[in-house]
Image (cartoon, rainbow, N blue to C red; front, side):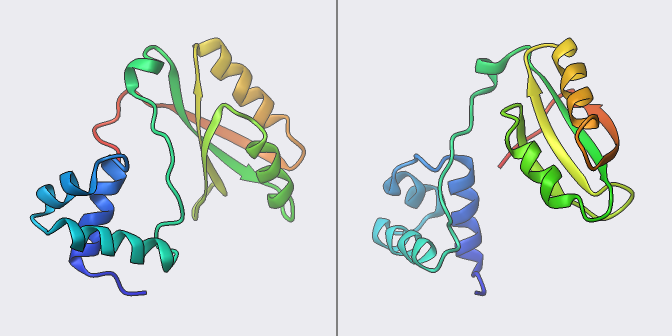
Length: 143
């Protein structure tokens, strides 16, 4: 499905705050409320909007350690490794990527010792060849 510029702007507004009222989004995008409502319904019906999620305010996790954990997976082990990572609540996101690593996970834990333990657990999974981590210092923005 080809998305219009208006659809893209609407999706961006929803990424910033999916709980915003239709009227609030309409004001922000300079569209009528009924236009915004109709576009949201169409995007949901056509599967462009697959669901909504919770973004936790930074203050709720102030002091938590976040890291990109790059993972190299042995051949034919991707499904098992991805399933094991999905079972770890500390892993917030998992991406399959091109380049020297196969996966990049975003891990969030309360303290550096727990990040060390998390990366050790990931490195110990059957099918994981190697991990490399980068601590996230700050997020400039998220959508």
